[in-house]
Length: 87
Image 1 (tube, rainbow, N blue to C red):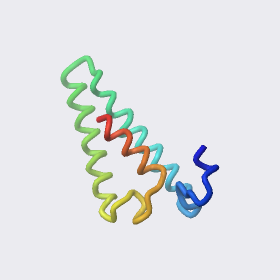
Image 2: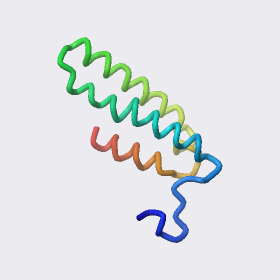
Image 3: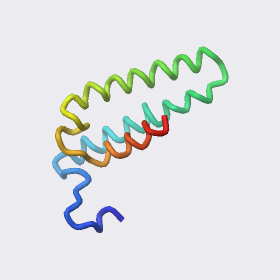
């Protein structure tokens, strides 16, 4: 369990609400966006791909300062990393 490791901070309490909001957005736009691979028509596939790459562009712009919430890596960064590695 991550919370049992002394000194490990997955996100600061000051960003808790923003972190939860971004995590939900990533899940909806990126994780679920990858499900476009299972589209049954070409137009549905292309729509899903466009939406996914718009989301990835948004995340890239957000990472200008290295991580999603600045200079400290947080749980959302790790979750996104795992998704992108599988992508």
